[in-house]
Image (cartoon, rainbow, N blue to C red; front, top):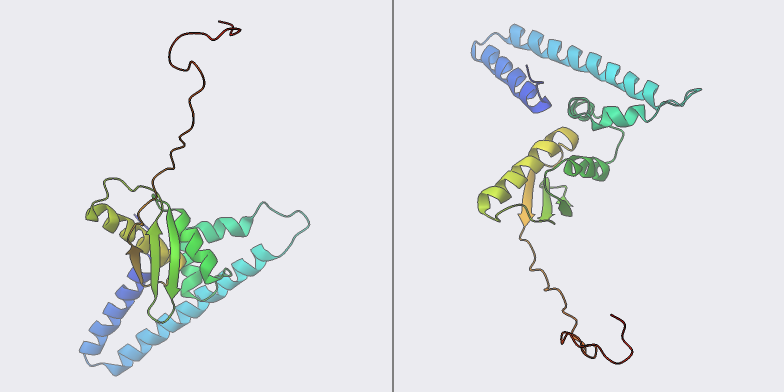
Length: 186
């Protein structure tokens, strides 16, 4: 059984609440919303405590225990869901992008629209549109867990690479002739 993402869970809760609302029972809808609210507060408090305890310096500091939690997609999505993720957005974006199969560079992020611009740095295969779309989708999937503020990704066109500079110089004497100059040792 695979883990449910925050987005999937949110959709399922909304569907249940919508079904209750369609039946016209305002008391049932209100009760269901109260249950969701209480559970969110409960899990949010528990996650806040985990972050507090793991972030507290102890007598023998563990080797980055918080780092392991923050690198976990499920824990990161729960922390983000509750507004408890201790890392700033740029750090979370970097964390998400570091797990992609292709190296990408951040262009810019528009907080108003939620769009992140990326540029593929290394060759991502054949260069066909399906490969670009796979890279874009992989970025969106990773960002959904680590940086849900990013709602869309635009891949900037790969810039034309400058050709390598070919150094041309004078050929050493007798190079390529097979003959040795006087004083050369074979």
